[in-house]
View 1 (cartoon, rainbow, N blue to C red):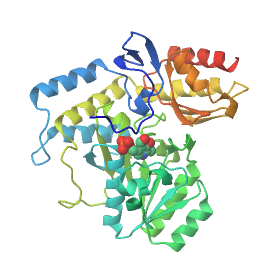
View 2: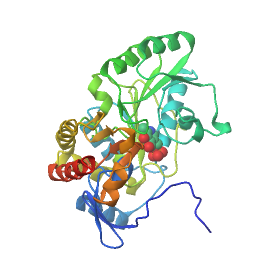
View 3: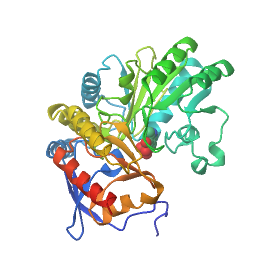
Length: 375
Ligand SMILES: Cc1ncc(COP(=O)(O)O)c(C=O)c1O
């Protein structure tokens, strides 16, 4: 059988990984500033993570949500403490799309309304309503098309007010920092406007934190910069450092009912062990503070390059916009300098490294980047 060929891949086989490095099958070392698409939060094969998962696997790997699971409660407790949202409620699932799907559905259960407001260049996942709220017609199949989603221009307060007048809005979904869309930071005033309008119209504010959350921005949720709370936060990627796990946390005003949401795999023993190891390491090694410090350092340094058009982002979620003619820099970083980075557009490099990235790693990247720009 052949693989269903949907990914354009680099001709590299990764066989080993540790911290911010990976090695290919020929023993070549790479610096990983991509983190497997923002997934590696505490570093590859972190010893505490490996131990917690291995120990758990020797006890019990999986049982369904039909029995009590103290690990889930432990996770809810620690997540509440570290994120500062202790009065929220946790629902566990398996991926970012599933988290958003549940968030949009729960919002509609809550207020009985149908319209979802999403924004231009948004990416919320590939499942039914999540993909319908994603601004990329190429990945929306005819069966996913719905007039329940209204797309608005990014940061347009007047358009947002008008949409609330025109529609019975169930929810507004927004990434605190758009990832796939090119690293666009939502302004604090725009997020506050969403909060006010949602309050006035009994709509649900959904903070998609799948890519920009879990400490990556230098705060636990990047939406926190606005100083207002969303009603639901969705998360995945960094939550399990590579173990598939996603979640939503839900405001105390939204009440659960049996059967309202559900999943077979979500919140299983191994997934909880992975997520707990991640949070324990984030706390122990002060990784949110590190993401803020190393991220600020990187952004300051990157802004000194004349050829860089713009540097956008927060913490260790950084977009570097280059002129079109320098679109090959990213390829050279990988091929010549053995540094993985991500791409938003060919001329926008995305940095999404582990939150444990050191300043020495940042300097190694800056040196390679300088060499490429001076060619
Ligand atoms: C902001 C955002 N939301 C949702 C998703 C979907 O997550 P997943 O691929 O885990 O379904 C992604 C994935 O890139 C994302 O960046």
